[in-house]
Length: 562
Image 1 (cartoon, rainbow, N blue to C red):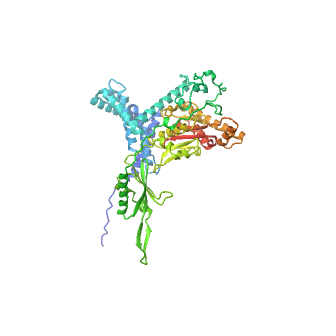
Image 2: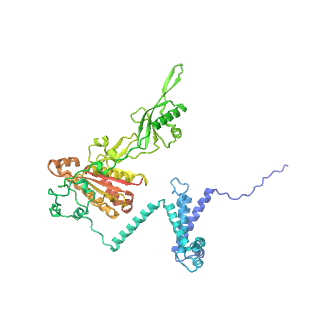
Image 3: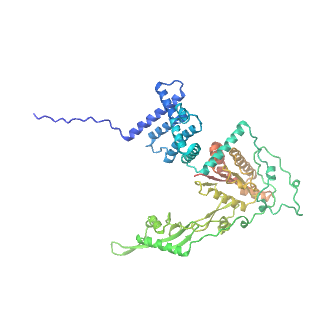
């Protein structure tokens, strides 16, 4: 009989994939974190948990309470790491969190000023053995004073990495936090007396900067100064925060000339030789890839120059042998964007295929030296003059250098969004300057809200303001509620007069010899800061104003982070 060969089965160990190992590790860390937190809160502990807590306290000292939350966070991330909507964990924030924890342990030990730092670590105080090791290394290397400086510097570095903010932004954040803390103590303990809200009389007594640019003269016919007693008596004050705007007799205001308050700037233009060189490069580059095209026009803008390219024809024989001319596809030109950017040594370039309403393809190439677009040049343009509106605003220039203007009265409202440094504040100041140059306080009133306290506070004192620029976050809700009440009041006036909007209502008032209602523009800088203070009330008021206020002549201009 032939012997059957029996293959020997080799006993192999249990193989677990890396993903499962990480899942098991995540479960273990979360369970260990939960047991540690419960042990902190429980009065009775087992021998194992007692040993575990004693070990953690000796290693981390006063930072022992942060350790279980760190373990739980790492364990949670390990479990959800493969989810599509998992939380982002960048290396900057990870390094920042670890560095902040380690420097905090070292700071605990340094600022404890213990006679025997090692004994303090053995007793579970300060930063534990880990904080003692870091602090002793710094002290032996740079001395005690140098160790203090090094720890503070590392803490600031860790905060920058963890928060993603610059030093300036961190300073502004700390300043706002300090002001909120002071306001909290004001309201909670009454240790500071709050100033009463400004009344109409108080605002009129304040010196108004730039008022002489709008008023022809503050003197009477004989050249003498007008006495305060000669002013018309003020109406009785109401308990509301802001005065009601009804319209009434106003002084004869004089609008300043644009040249008196705005400076002009010289626009830099690209030389014709450089333009011809770029035209040649574009045509030769397209031809080298088999695309016949010709530059038929050039539009120079402040930041880019648009080259209008007309696609050519390509000849080929059909099945019968006849030669046919076929227009080159626009997609062939669009696909060569990177090659054109390389040939022109300009990146990035933008291809508009085709230009709306034109039989050409627009290739926008950045200028070597962008020119500054002055607000005065846009306001003096023909396009700005042709807009017949009190709320016309200048936005800038397009790619061909033509002025771009808009009418705030025809917009629902205006939202300016962008990252830090993208020009939101410049846009707001340009809009406000356009409104001030085209309206007197009799036709336009402004409400400005500036939580950062640095962007709009320079406008304090102009006669268009209903009240000084609002910088206290607690006052914002009151101002927005007053705006909604003013909107409702105007709608009641429209219903009584049978008017549909502010234009029809003002026409009726002028026909009766009465002063028209002024437009109200509410300018809000950094809406995100307001939403953190009172999100429900701010959102409710802003939404109500945005949905209903345009017909009453109340408009919103809001800037926020994108």
